[in-house]
Image: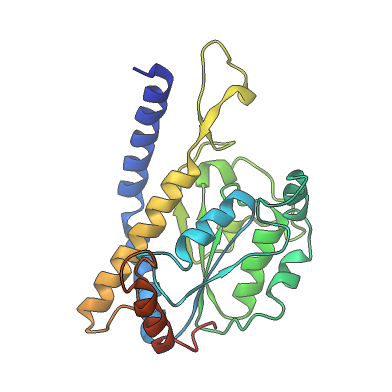
Length: 248
């Protein structure tokens, strides 16, 4: 039996169960926001930097996901950079968030989901501020305990959770890594990230709830199917054509 992996699984399972229970109202509120935006032919935008960009990708062009969601991936902020440390420098670069959004057709009434577990860095803060200024509803996917323990590095003096209309708390501990070893007690000895698993759970729970709300309202949900099943790509092209005009 892999004893260390077992301990990580137990801790992660406990965290995920607690996050889901504590965030039920936020899941419902975000799903209502998504459903209203879809029925009003608005766009839902998703953004994150470095590993948080995986949360933006989880919502975008995803089998079982919502078609009117548009991912925003700033150059240099995905983990394809060499050296990879450049991504950490760029996400702290004030002014870059405005550059990323400058030519995108964000419109008042759209929704913008910004993922940042620490919630402190200049780019996600700036993206949220710019979205807010353009009249978008801002949903933050962050860690309240982590973010509350660190200082922001944006000149506004604000963290992501202080800008958002809805805060989804992924429950990750400070530093994100979950498991400590008695033989390796100092802070850097923690391993096993938490935010990816709990964040993906929250986002997919919102998608599932959104589809249910759309069906209750008599609205056909615009949903991707896997392109790897028979007829999947044809179904997606048809559904995307029906949804055209929402962020394309």
